[in-house]
Structure formats: structure tokens, C-alpha cells
View (tube, one colour):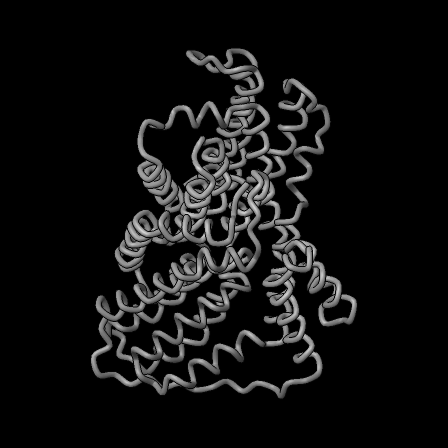
Length: 461
């Protein structure tokens, strides 16, 4: 394990060595243009730093932007002379959509609406183990559709830990309760465009390629799979860690009465959700609708400057860096070169399976945001039908979220593992099975369903 100083030195050496090598020697045995060689160097630097995490991931995004404007831009031919083509990735419709989602998340957490919802569901399970487990999974998934799955995991673990005190320390069902939280949060994020960064990256690239997908259409694409995965998770946990005949004791936490501010926060949430669902018919894109909760929440004092500073800005910039990298791959033509390496003589279904498998492996050992930012732009240059492209990109986005086999795979996994209530073996076994089930279902059923939805709603370019 490298010390912090050694990590910074390793990161600096990686950047300087890569730049120096490409400037002096290029990439031997390739027929790449200068711009493509530089883009390959930036891609390699980003991949190494994303996987190693020697520096914060959002810093890598700013490094990508700096290298693109200073190193890549002068080598690009044609009309690309302004760095704004890269700046645009750092504040566009998708970034604004996510910012609106973060503000809603801050509202729900500040006024305890997430806790109220969780308590209301769990109080109805009457202490029955299987029903309680399903309730926990449902709450985690629903909250993760709208707020940070990391915050949801932290909150829900504090709710279920009192349950563990009434279960024998050797009882296996304890593991099921703990694992249900991070895994359900991982799965729940796939349900909405704001649920997890890979969704935003997929939507952004599809939009750039001329696809028109509304908030509600994305939910139609992903909700059936989310529900299937949640039911599979429930049944898997019950079979791997059976509850036997135990009865769980649920004690509700005291919460203050709903005030005007609570109802205002609920109203903002409902109006924003309705705007995302029906904004297309009003000629409003998702980013424009996201301005509503941002303006109203801070205008009327529901959130203050301190809340604004606490928003997860690093996540926005991580997403932006991946989008900027995709722009470079497109402008330099390196994306098409990399795609040409793929076994394109295979059928589209096999290409989809190959790409999904690669995304699952990569997301297991590195950030799912970074994986989506690396893989999705590479497949956008494939010459396949509109509906098959929709199926391919949606598969990759969901597969990035379904990888959950290691404690380091996702923040929810890390939080659950840090509780010391589970061990690595349990997470690897159950998480690995869920990853495999996700891969099989997405590859076998995804293309059929998504092509049907694409034809039904004329999602094309």
C-alpha cells in the first residue's frame, strides 16, 4: 500500500511519462494521427488514475480538461479551434439534471422525509423477517432512485442496526439484512436518470447522437429490470441466509410534526417529478425542469448557502470528465479506431454481450462512473441500428450499476463493509451472483424489450 506522498508521486510520474513518451516516440506499430495518439495518451492517463485512485477522481476530470485544451486542441484539424467543445461537458443538460437531483436529495435529508418514508414502510412489515427484508429492499431502492445511494445506505444501516441487536450474533439472517441495504441501493439507482452517474453518461451520449429520451421514457426502459433484480435479490438473500422462525422487533424513532417547510419540500419534490415525467409535452428538457428545485429551495430559504456548499460537486465533475473524454474520442477519431478493433463480424447481440461482460468486470474493480465514461463513448461509433444502439448503451449503463461483488466496487458496498457486520466472502458470493444474474438477464431479455420500447415510442436519431 503506497503512502499518500508515494501515490501523488506515482500519479505525477504517470502523467509526465505518458506525455513525454507520446511526444518523443508516439505509439509504435500504429497508424494513428497525432491527435489520436494524444487522445490515447489522455485516455491511458485517465484510466490509470481512475483505477489506482492515486488522486481524487474529480481531480482527474480537471486534468483531462487541462490536457485536452493545452495538449490535444492544437493537434485537432478542421474547425475545432475553441476549447468550448470540451468546456461544454462540464455544464450541460445532464449535469444540470443531476444538480437538481442533488438539491432534492438535500431537501429530503434536511427535513427527514427520507427517514419518515423508511419508518412508514418498515412499520407495516409487523416484524416478519421475509416481509421486513422486502420492505428494507423496497425503501432502499425507492430512495436511491431520487437521492444519493451513498446517503441512503448510511441512513438505512442506522435504521436496521437496532434490529440486529435482537438477533443472535451467530444467526445468518443478520448478513441478509446488512447486505440488502447496499445491494438494493445499487440496483435502485438504475430506475431514474438521476439515480446514478452511469445513467447520466448514457443519456448524454444518446442525446449527442440524436436520440430523444425523456425522463419517463428512461424509467420505462429501466424500471422493469430494476424490479426483477430487486425480487431476485430478495429471494437470493432469503435462500442464502434463511431467517428460520425469528421475529424482528421494530422500534419507530420519534419525528417532529410536519411543518410548512416539510410540506413545501414535499411539494417541490412532487412538482419536479411531475415536470420530469411530462416536461417533454411542454417542450421542457430535464435540465430546465431541474432549475425549479434549485431556485425555489434556495430562494425561499428551505436550503441555505451551507447546504449549497455540501452538495456533492465532486460527483458532477467526475461525470463531466468522462463526458469530456468522450468528446475527445469523437473529435480525434480515436473512438472509431478503437471500435474497429472489436470483433465486428459478430452479431450485434454477441457484441452487446461482449461489451456488457467487459463493463461488468471493469466496474467490479473501478468506479462505475469511470467505467461508463470509458466504455460507452467507444461503442457509440458502431454502425448498428438505432434500436440496437439504444439497447447496447442501456445495457452498459445498467451493467455498470449491477457490478457489486467487492467492498471497493461501490460506495454503498464500502459503507456496509465498514460496519464490520459482514465479511468480504459474503459480499463477494452474494454480490457476484447478483452481477452474474444481471449480466444474463440484460443480455438475454434487454435487447428484445428495449427494441420494443424504441419502436413503441419512436426513440430514434
